[in-house]
Amino acid sequence: MISFEFPIVERVRILLRLEELFRRLTHFSNADGADEHHVALQTLFDMAELGARGDLKSELIQDLERQRYALEALRDNPAIAEGALEAVLGEIESAMTRQLEFTGKFGHELRDNEWLMNIKQRTAIAGGACQFDLPSYYFWQKQSAEVRRADLQRWSAPLLATRDAVGVLLKLLRDSGKSNTFTARHGAFQQMSGGKVVHLIRITLDASLGLVPEVSANKYAVNVRFIEPTTHSARSRAATADIPFTLAFCKL
Image (cartoon, rainbow, N blue to C red; front, top):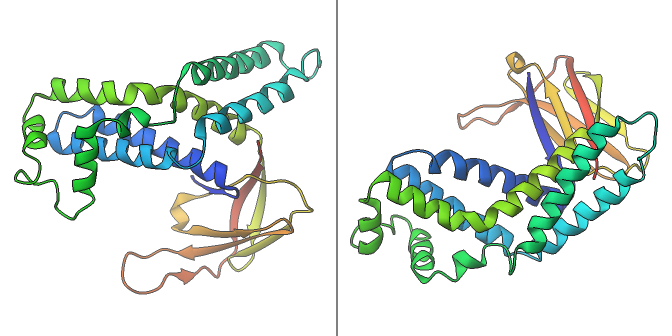
């Protein structure tokens, strides 16, 4: 099975992008090669750029508070497992505390580092990170993997509180959706939303079908079309068979 997620609102797009960047940062930081660490550093730059838009810290705290209030109202509900509820509330409280302890805007330590910002500026140019462009960066790349990794960990450490908050919110978001099975007749499907609030749409189907969904949604309806992807220059073809899939509407 393969799942696809389609954010409907901007704040969920940012959460998903940050999640992917944190995943990429961890993967390439844990490698030993200088090229992998170069990608990790570029990922840090992308994260700082993304987090600089708006007040990410305040938005995360507000979302966490909303979730805490909503879940606290479920206490003493006999249909809710008390232990599981308290565990989730503990995760929310921990994430909020770490956000409140964090000072300044997301990624400001990176932006205040002149050496890093010089690298960021040069890497924006095609081939701009050559040895003759950035001798000090070339020297850093020639250090041992342990030295480079320690630097990457030091630069990324102030961002980890945000990683935890993003993880908590996305888990709550994904867990909020109830999956239902449908069939896209001749590769297309439409469902009226009835005005319900949706922040994320999740679609799951058999990976062996070799199809990907395209989604358009508004407050009135959700439209899904399945296509046969291609890596060639020809345009992807719309599926014409009946496609079984599961659909989940998620909201924070």
